[in-house]
Image 1 (cartoon, rainbow, N blue to C red):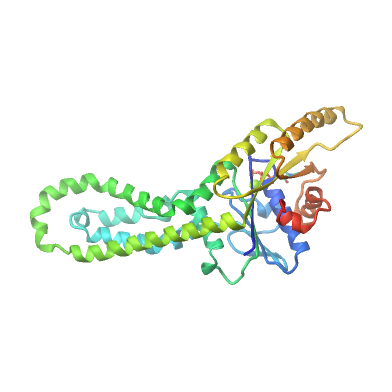
Image 2: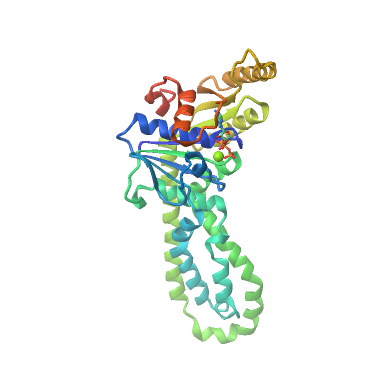
Length: 338
Ligand SMILES: Nc1ncnc2c1ncn2[C@@H]1O[C@H](COP(=O)(O)OP(=O)(O)OP(=O)(O)O)[C@@H](O)[C@H]1O
Ligand SMILES: [Mg+2]
């Protein structure tokens, strides 16, 4: 892997359209590089943008471009299956807990992939893709990630670091939920239990689980390092106050996870001699563009007008890419601050 380009920003500013356009553009310019476009918004819309069914599978779009709209549940299930099975076994073997009526059913309905927070599930998928060891047959050189609006974006960056803590917290919640029945039962059964003490076996299992948590944490550290080293964040905004404010916040919140390399100012109203209304809007936008340029003056700024037609399908996305990047070299797209 050489580069992970992440697009973030407020809702509706063109993150998905610019991600898709960038992916198509780079796949045209770099036919020898394998490129993957991933959507991390639960309301996936790559299928609409490409006008072709994508979904939860690596879908080839050109000779060197693939896209996927992951179903986070699938990855959460695979990722946690082993750990959850071990935890279940441990709980069933615990004195008292194992005796609680319906504990088995309770455990089965509590430790499900469904109960894992969505951000964690998405992060698991992100990790699966980023972690070279667990990659599928295709090895990608460039990944373009269409991220959800800021709040959820932060969760995606945070979780690799805190993976083990999240899993631990998740299991502690379970412990807490059974604490009370355990206390009641323990009074009654304490005397009966003494002869059946198999604490050695439980200790072994506990050790295994601990090791798995440590592995998770190491993996999380590896992923965070990868994002630090190869990640390039580009924030997308329109020339209006709320989304400008949002990218300033996003800059501060993401600073410790990923390098911010550029800002896209999208959906600028084009110049027109005929439309006075459009002229007024454009004048206001130009003021914001000045503000954005001075706020982010050390970064690359890409400006793109609102196109007459929606950027849909390969040709539509190529048009948007030309609008966004113009004649700029591929090197400047990959490494905007070089
Ligand atoms: N430069 C442009 N010219 C014309 N239409 C555009 C342009 N950029 C984006 N659009 C259109 O604007 C709409 C919003 O864009 P998009 O879905 O990419 O935004 P988003 O930031 O991904 O939104 P969300 O937060 O909902 O995922 C879409 O219909 C898209 O096709
Ligand atoms: Mg989107």
